[in-house]
Image (cartoon, rainbow over all chains, first blue to last red; front, top):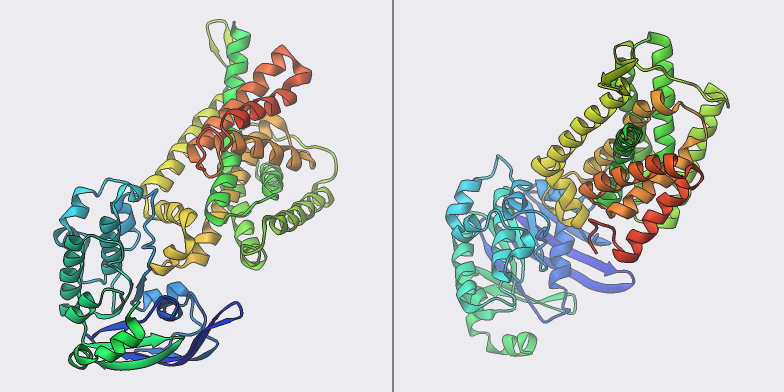
Length: 230
Length: 285
């Protein structure tokens, strides 16, 4: 289950957002995609998920081209995007939010999820709109897990969350990785990224400007200053 | 007294038929954000199909089963060929396209069934009246109330207690996220459109023995359905039920009290609701 992106160009209307992004996620790897706001991180994830259609390049997953496929078709291959806005349905209960995503092929059943996220079990009858930000994020990840993920695309999962919750999300991501699911993580929190990732990519103005292993990246003070400092 | 009871029952029966028409309209609007001006025409088609099936087979029950299915199937084909191409366009385009469909159905109906109205007989088992003391009421109309109540319950169960229903509700909030969970969104849209329109067809069959069939009833039914949806609130199941019965009761009570003003009062009721609750009784802002 390998993801290989080769020189994709994506546009919003006429603005050229991705100018030839190439990257790889190997089976079982957790890879981060770093960069400033507006660098093209979210657009990269949206291009993989099929929301944005790249005009050029290729996105191969498991040796199949994803470009040109419908959003649900890509999701059914196990490439699941957890968007930045989390996409929790407010008028559905927590349990319904999960139930509409359940696939019997997934290694996580509803019971597994409730064991992993006791908070979601407590709140299963509540409406999605009654959840806190942290609970919504957990529900969004949980929903992807029951949906049989092969590659998770996570867009800023710790954004705006309290440190305790961030730690919990990190623990969950470690569990997901140890279950063999590949993860492509977009994240602003460098500490979180360094704790988790096998490899890092840095993206700037729609191009990948750096790639390196977790160890290498720890030493790259200059890269961090140049591309990631606010 | 029994006159008022009679009119109240009439109003509820009529209201339940309005509910069937409007609930389809409101589900389609809620999930697809699509304005279906052909809704009344599909109701018309349901009525005419009932007429033909009853004339050919003499069996009303067959019409009740078959006509809505045929209407729903036709709606599914229309969705696949035409309507799904217009979802991303503004509402004015939806209105243009579906008004066109409505005219086509209406004119085809005239050329097939003629410009003069037809009557459809109630099934023999439901002909005649039920007597309670000195109160008489047509059996068929009681059947309509009971039958639509069962349909309403089944529909509530479908929308609130099944995976399909949860997907329809989720999709009305954010269709793209439903798609991101691997749901074949085009299938969901087509099925929902067929379901909503099929309910209008069912309403057409049920109403045929009461009101007869004539080729120009489509726009009138469409207008009433929109009044119901505005009163109840766009996208709300309970709203369609309460709105439908309200409109039915107002219409039927006014027929006794002030016949000339019956239609006026329906729009009056709508105006009052809009003034007090702009999103309707059960609508979400």
